Length: 191
Ligand code: AMP
Image (cartoon, rainbow, N blue to C red; front, side):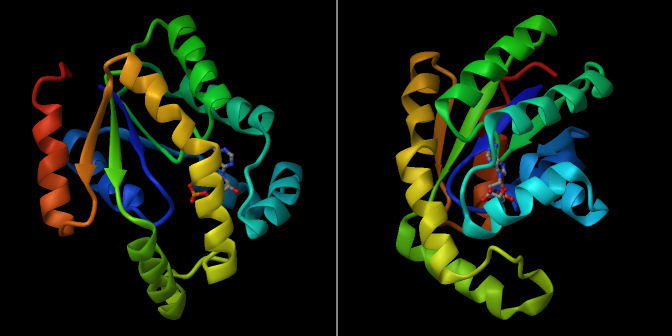
């Protein structure tokens, strides 16, 4: 099973991805986590990405796509959840090509819908709980990330709607309810 968890920053993609990993034995491919690992390792890629991420802007498609290709090549034919990828139409089209080359098929894109006001409140409280805070968790950067989401990332929605692969779920419900709505959409997907 290959799915994309899609939604704005703070929508709960990471939380839902973790639940799917535990329940369905899928591998989570979070480009944000990969970039944070590269920063922690002090690699060249990490150095390039760090200031871009701190501003809440998008890291270049070249970097992101080569990270994804590497991970997919190493992972064989397991099931995957993409989290935080694709972030624009170019990445979505490139993913189609990568999957085609690997003879894999995207099953479903799950959009977690949350309005901007709720997102800003969530990120502000995450920033206050210092143990969960990230260097890009502050109001100014979040607003930038939300703008970029609306300007570039949302353009992917019609692309996947056209392919009849996108479903929307209400991300303003409880974590449990969102999780059960996600599960409801996975029932028809072959493992
Ligand atoms: P995330 O953990 O998904 O919220 O990502 C944190 C930051 O990493 C984003 O604000 C971007 O700067 C960068 N990033 C993560 N995934 C991507 C992607 N697919 N394309 C471009 N930049 C990304």
